[in-house]
Length: 371
Image (cartoon, rainbow, N blue to C red; front, side, top):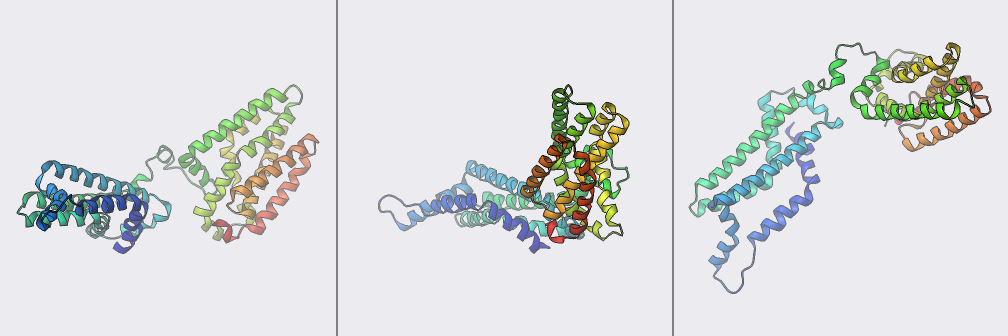
């Protein structure tokens, strides 16, 4: 476990901060060790002059305080890096692997990880301590060494507490608390993801949707009937939700790919996500219900879900590729708009449903598209 943690966190820390560390511990400190003196001076004087900065650390309380502040800053930076990496998705396995060990074993491993991160500080501190002891200074050198050991242990203890509390943190969001006891069927899981992790995307999409509703209602109400306005609006609204469709595909392929092994028919897997979108599109559906005749409302909603299923099925053919997805969205939207202008849009509904299912059925098991 220790070797894995060192490779992920200690090595990663050095890679990310290589430039700053090289400047600090090579350019500055080595310069202090080998600074040249002006004129000819005895060798013993040159040695003491080169060690002046190090001696000041073990003699002067002010220099000592400055060094301790540097150590604290370095420790805080390393803490930030490790905590951030613990929250990265591909490091989630560490929660299950490291927490299976007893806490004192976890502490030992994290102490060694932090020791490796602190290695430049340890080298310089041990060097300063040895120089201080040689010159007869004992209290400050030993104090520096004890302080660094305490800081190393304190941060390691913090890592142990952090990784053992990750499971408690997962349900602390508002959406998580509100929906904690709700049933979570497979085909509606993405709705919870939207409410918990995609609130801003969802809010922006809804704002754009209602701006389109207002614009279409203002500019086309006088020249077109309510049914035509509703038809054009649903085409635009579903297209406005393209980013949600894209995210839903990624969510299913990343987190729910195991569902491909469930004993569900393809038609059920094809139509199942409509439950997600019935919830996500509830405000728009409510607007349609309040502004359209009942029979017209049903037709418009059917058109909307046919478009949605076509957009979604395309994702299974092209994979998680935003550029290609946007190209197809643009192409299909223009075809649909032409169909609306020439009043043949309703012939597209059965065609879209059939084409959507064929694309989905052909590409549903494409494992390479989930990458």
